[in-house]
Length: 530
Ligand SMILES: Nc1ncnc2c1ncn2[C@@H]1O[C@H](COS(=O)(=O)NC(=O)C[C@H](N)c2ccccc2)[C@@H](O)[C@H]1O
Image (cartoon, rainbow, N blue to C red):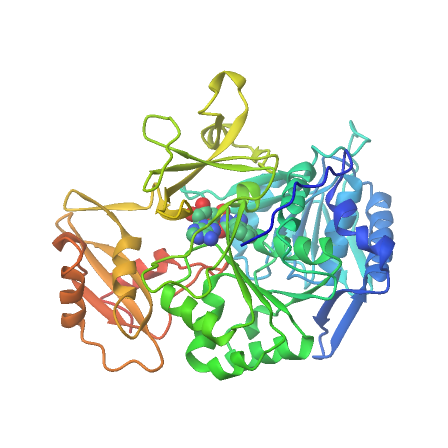
């Protein structure tokens, strides 16, 4: 049970750097970032060294003429250099736009054209097609190196205020055009304070961050670690694919808390369960982004009997909003852990189809979020902003805006809130509304199935066929698709029984580590994975 205390009233105008560097004033010698240098050696940056780096980079950016209202495109993985740079941006009221080195050129070009950054900074060699406009520079462990100064701008602003944009994260847009989620300092800091009331980590902890820098999960990790006076341990993305190397990183860095999407555990649980169970120092796991398949969650919990496992729910439009401890032990009949309730200072509302709140066990509705951590809006997209930030349905006249999450939720018999899928995540199969998650949940009940994904395959005649892929647990016996279909038929209507079921070694994930349903559909349409 999470103990929640009223959030502290934080200083007016608190910005991300104020919050994240607080420990530099109290424990400057403690490690802030523990990372692998290029030569594989571990390099530690103390809070004092991080603060000094922020000071130097702030001076360099100010000298280059940057100030409130400017944007910096920051292409890097998570590192002390990256953290020092985005904190320096915060000091000047400059927004940062994080993109990962793996971002495809076309997507990077779209983001750059839309945000018109005053400066493009890259940890690696800057991409040629971006070296033409604006300022260009590189991030190095020893500091910022400008290759071309930003163009001079007429300045209308001087003061940095908490309502200023801290960062913009581009997420996939249903229209195909990426949407820029604009987050103010005020919103991020409000979320950070709400998160710290959960008592997740303390100053002696080391928080492994496994998400790409462009995914705000990495900013949650950094806020959790630095806001708690602890250390952040960026896990190199390419190591996540090798279970033994992933475990070696956790062991060698003394990691005590691992944050990441559920898929980061798949291969470790299949191939190195004993190695994971040997990490006795690992006392906390936090996951987010999508449901954790129950068979895998059970195996994770069995491997780490000493660990607190937290399900963190939320959207980039508020970074996140709810934290719920995974029950230990997990009841046999539980088919997913609860998402709990919003952190103190925020409120998750369950709204029915008539726009009125629904309550009581078994109630279903769409989740709306009331919070000081809500995003400012989508960059250069007032229409999408209006459909996401809507008048409070419980009191429209107040014009307080709440986030319409697009997520469905239900209240369990225990009064806990559960995620029930995306409102737009339904598919129609022969005129019937189907939640693919319901098909996947049934497949996960099959003995020996560790993970499952269902997908619809468009047919030439305009109909769709339902198919599925499953990942087997290591000790599973041979898989019989006919038997599996019969098992589904005992609990699901015929139109929800997959016509084809393939066994695969792994499920495709997006750059942010979430199930990649587009790749799944492509696989299935080409008559299934090879
Ligand atoms: N714990 C969940 N169970 C089940 N579905 C979920 C869950 N957390 C999100 N989701 C889903 O993912 C959507 C949000 O997607 S997103 O905007 O790309 N953001 C994220 O996925 C990460 C999010 N910003 C975040 C960052 C850091 C910590 C927690 C959450 C939500 O609307 C849900 O549909």
